[in-house]
Length: 223
Image (tube, rainbow, N blue to C red; front, side, top):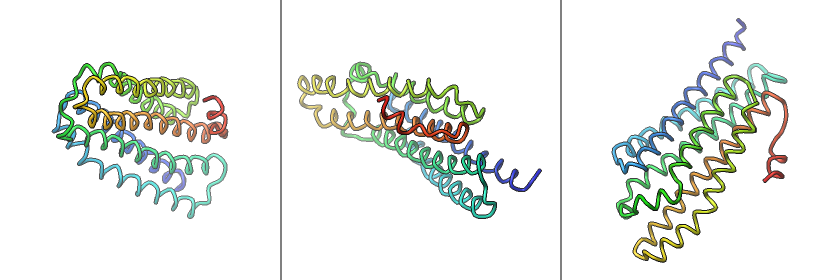
């Protein structure tokens, strides 16, 4: 096996490990939020530094790979895609930590579970975890057939997000004592919506690597 191939295998393995960590962070953030588990929330926050370390290491290794081996065609596309994907995974990790911080916010412990149900936040979490997992499978198998399904699920996340202001405004009108927390909850839902956008960005990088196509503008035109 060529040295360049060994280095690429090492790069891909690093990205896989980072991906698994971010998936775990998102799952634990979901668990902490839905069960009000402060211990799990603290675990998410404490592991955020590991996500940051992965991003810096992978970015550095990708830059070194390009500088040392001057990859072209598919190898160059893969290296560039891995750099962008690890950056995107780090952003998702940041949002997971933000969700965990919300759980630890002592000022917002009185929000009823019924409101969370009405906002469909558990469904939102489920869709996002599925999107991130499917992105992982698509990259692992170098298969872009999943991309349409992943992008359509982002539309599902957006639909839930767009109904949230109306639901929250009605709730806060009836419960003015929860206005502060209601606004913070809207910011939290915005974080979830952004995770969906980031999963779509990962899809774009996978399609760029595998099919040598750019989805960005065509995706925007489709909404």
